Image (cartoon, rainbow, N blue to C red):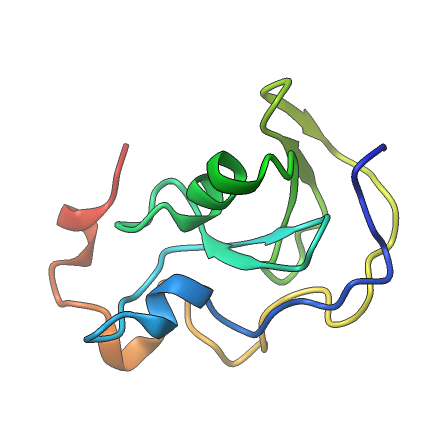
Length: 116
């Protein structure tokens, strides 16, 4: 899969833009750029930062950064790939980290803030 760099480590354990916001934001699920390791939130999340990263950089492949998920998404082709190369560790956010998360930032009415 051209455009994937298996040696690049994730940028962190949470969405880079949500973490940098003032006040910090929250996310539903996380996605990892398979080109540069950027961690962004999914399209159901309020910020939709993984797709914004693709729009800004053209990095077409993301992999789920959720425990137990190994699929890739190709933004350019709008296609799901069940398999792909093994990426540098870690493969997912810490198992104790909630989804949605981080737990202390998720509003009580969080489901009302998700994108369909």
